[in-house]
Length: 318
Image 1: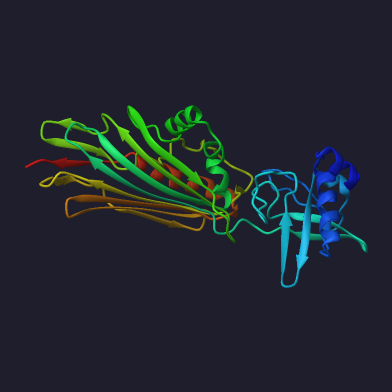
Image 2: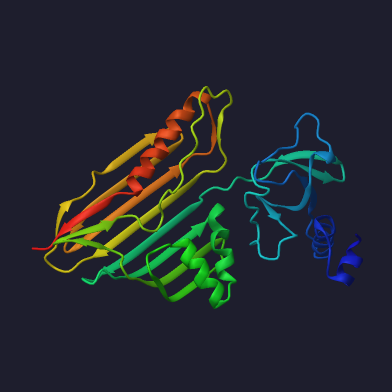
């Protein structure tokens, strides 16, 4: 579609919208390049030695600037400026330039993280008051996209699915996506969970990771023939503070765990500190292809994460 037609209809597909944006930038004296890409989570690249437009299924806009390049996803109404996401990042693309087609590569999603801190005020009734603050960046930017645009009724259902705490009551929630150089989503929640802790006599059984457990293990594959592919690098950091009535002691705390392997890192630390129990969990994955023989090591890595996520502490009342 011609730019004038897109402007008249306020409508266009990826090709029309990129052409329209390119025309607007041209009027402002900003050159840009129509770019074809094989979009999708599988990260297919144009063949560097034999590129053709039929290798792609989507169009984005490249804006070369002095010392940097900006990429625009013109089809999305909500994607931040210069944010491609996993749909079009880190792959060979075809620039349609006045001098002919040229191959370049879109940037990878670096610095992706999910950082969460939560405070659990535990009551003798077994109820917990929970305050959660989480930041999502990089590939996690859209993790709360639905919640940010939900009605109050929809939000309550989504929060119950995201944080399946027992007998959950939602007191307040907020999702913000502030403007800045790095796309960022911030989530703040105030919750109440009745029946959060289990008592057995004077012992309190406390789940240490109620918010971000690994709930599914990868399937076992014997005699794997192809490499293992981890599509994105990212870091999850969770710090939970459990505030407990004075006088409680720790009868049992799980052993601290650290796993360091080429494809990932996992760490869990638990400690008592001035009437509080502090739990910290870090999970990192490293993007890349790994030899077929690595598959069993990756399975064991996630089995260890699964076991650690299910651990409970046992506290005692004097």
